[in-house]
Length: 317
Image (cartoon, rainbow, N blue to C red; front, top):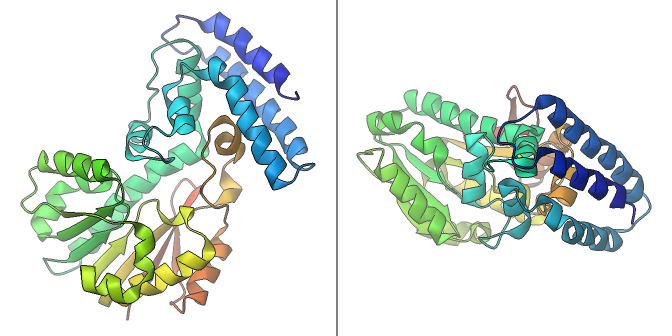
């Protein structure tokens, strides 16, 4: 198999760092270089295969490499889907920490590699951007604004802005299809002494396609956002959800939608090393076209210091 040489090099590397609990960056650069070379080989292989063949080969690679990378907390979570889906709130909480979760050996090196990738850094920047944007937005509005947070996960951006939420008396509704994510979020926000805890609603985001049912269930909102949901939805569903959520906005309301930009991360990290290929590969123009097809205003596109994730913002006038 074409990846056998890569696995042999990884197994040899594992022996050289076994038991080490501190990163040697000369060795780390060697580790990353081996993986970069492997990705170049992947690029050539992908050009010769159809989607079904490629999926089968990726599954086989992960099965054959599980033993080599079993000590990596981050890679194991991104492969095994312990909560039944990729990118669950526990995985994202670990990414937010920005530090390796494995203590030694190749697990430590793979976790460090995982945390340093463009998209992992982009996920951390996205959280901080949402926090700062929401703080600024609320500071310019009357108190008591209604906020809808869709597919809320751990609500870490809200956790980081507790004082603003108290000062502005924000009325927040958080939805997620994972009941444990809602329980976790409620617990950490409770410990932040929020004067008014969000309302937590177990709700499948796909149901937002129905504008009438969405209005009946949630009512008008001033701010609507989701940190990471929209990348996982196909074009047809997104167009319908965009229209439904825009209908939900009060006049002067704002809709905030981050999207990944495929030009600024290597998908092999997620399609080969991890089993995390459920998010769609898009560029900003693709997303702008979806807003247009939904009949929405042209979005403002905001880029942070990390271009791997862009944020699209529209306001209802």
